[in-house]
Amino acid sequence: MLDERALRKPGFSEGYPVRLADGQDWVFPKPRIRFRPKIGPDGRVEVGRTAFGPEFDASFDVLFGVTEAEPGEQMRVQFEMAVRLLSANYELTAEQLADLIVFEPGDEASDERWGQLSRALMGIAPKPSPAT
Image (cartoon, rainbow, N blue to C red; front, side):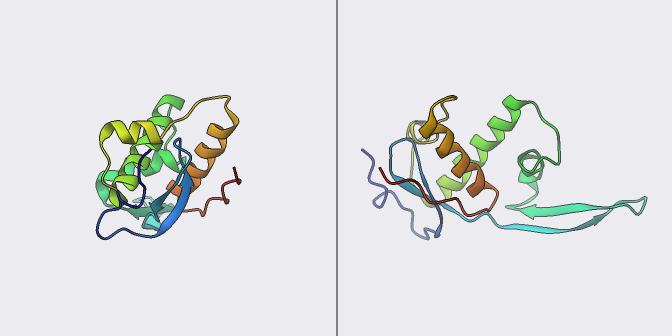
């Protein structure tokens, strides 16, 4: 089993604990999301936001439902953001990340984990994990 505390990077950032596939709580740093009005050339006001930098704008548009995307792309974006946030706090290999961030449709524990993970990615405090 991985040692969550030992794998923390210098500069570890407190955030949202989420119980991942290994049964341990791992901390996702709070995403730095900032919403602001975005005024188009026609004067229409829309919601603009910044988070992590412009290279993540398209991913956040999918994550927040601003841009429609197929279910496979929505899941890919969730995986991408989960990997990036978890990697900001921990020294993990690609294999370790793949073993921690798992979704198994129809599995109650996996559904709960994925719901908490999704909330953390959007900067919404996850509900506490149920005791095991």
